[in-house]
Structures are given as C-alpha cells and as structure tokens.
View 1 (cartoon, rainbow, N blue to C red):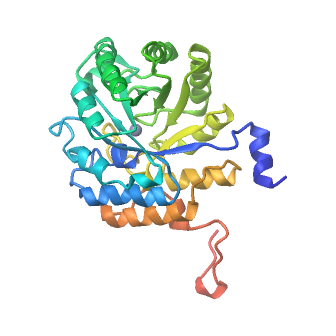
View 2 (cartoon, helix red, strand yellow):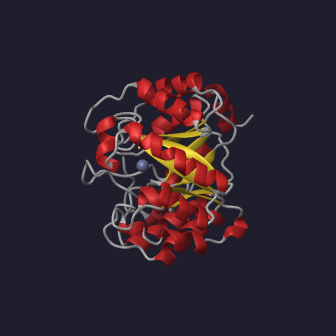
Length: 322
Ligand code: ZN
C-alpha cells in the first residue's frame, strides 16, 4: 500500500471526494470591478478541462443587489456543456428560480443563515420567512425537473451573535428535508469554523437527517480552512467547496482571505490519498491565469510554490533558506 493510501485509511478518509468550484459566484460576487462575462465563462471552461465537474456558477439575484452577477444567464449560456459539467446557481427567491430554470441550470441552491441576525442582514427576512419562501422555489424547480440544494450560512458562528447553536443547523436541515431538499451545505461564511466544530456539526447532521448529503464550505479567514477539511474527511464527508486562487473575501473583516483555494485543496487531498479526478497541475495553471484576470496576487499557495517535488538547480539560488 502506498504511503498516501495508507494515510487515508488510518484516518478513515473517503477514497474519493467531489470538489465544487464556487469561485465564479462566492469568489467574485463582492468584486467591485466588473469581471467580463467572457472571463467568467473561460474560468469555468478552464477548470472543467482540469477535471472539475461541479460549479456554483453564478447567482440569479437582483442585479441591483449584486451587480457583479448581473450576467448570470449569459454565463450559464456560454459555458461548454459538452464536458458533463453540473452548473448550480444560487437562487434567492421565486423570481430567481424562474430565471434559473429558463437558463437550464443543473441545480438551484437556496440559502439561509443559521443565525437570525445574519439572515436579516443578508436577505432582510426572518429565518422562518426565508424557509417559507423556499417552498415556491422548490415547486418551480421541480416543475422544470431541476434539483434543489440547501445551504446554511454562518453554520459555524455568526459575526453578530457569536456562537451558533448546533440545534439551529439541525432544525434547518430537517426543514429542508421536509421540502425534499436532501443536499445540505454548511457554510463557514466568515471563517469561524474549527475542527471540533466541524466534527460536532457533521455528527449532529448525520443523526438528524441521515438521508441528507453533507457538503462543507470553508473560508480560510483564520488560516485553518484546510485543517477543517481534514476534520471533515475524517468524518467521511465527500463534498467540499472551494474557489480558484482563494478568491473572495469577508465583508466583516476587510483584507481577510476568502474561500479555501481549489488548487490548495486538490493538492492536500491528493497528498493525503484522496482521489478527486482533477489534474492538480492544470488547476494550478488555472489559478495563475486567474491572477492575470484579477490583476493581482491571490491567496492560494499551491500554484505559487509549484509541485512538491519540483527541483531547483543548486546554483540557481543564492542561498538556501532556513
Ligand atoms: Zn462562502
């Protein structure tokens, strides 16, 4: 048995996981400068050719609320669908669901915050009102033969309320299951997750909604994003969300880094013996390309350092560092 496979077995990691690229939506939504539609499409196509199969491609939200994603329909229409990619999109309300269905997305994602104050701040509704509104979204999606996933934001802590009770998460997951939504993403919106919280929340969800698929969405705000993934893997989680380059930020912490970087996630998974079906080098190339699109350095690290076993000529460096 190889070293990596042996490691994966010791920790009880799944053999293979799904990486969902959320850069086009979560990574870009707060960018003040409009990113060209052709660049958004090229970003998805590039990552698809690197082997990524699932994308949170955009959000059918009001263009006034999120001007960056005003080209949602054009992005969906422009992506090369021959590669068997699944394009999911955030849908905040029935109007968004109608637009998403017309654009022929593969899945819609409804979302609410585990904390009442964050939900009010985010969508100006109580959690109860949000859940009520999802019923119509679900029926629009069902009519169009499109599956619906549910996301829970601030699942590991709230920037306004602090700790978020685990019962808030299991209650929402049960409400989702009651509407037929059996894919739940725990979102670490402001980077408050820690390994003990990940373990606690995954176990509680498994118990509350055993039929539901769990996905984890971490931000690297406090530098422990990949450690949280490691904790999730040990709990048997098989779906992880990330953004190329670590695009994205945190509205409550100016200067903070965004999502965990896809190239770093893929690097860690492969080195820990977990398969993804993704070409790590091609993803790193895509991250470097993305820096060109954004016109700045992005926080992801694996693309900058290159493969672990890339060797340098001894006389090419002035001095070895400690
Ligand atoms: Zn996020």
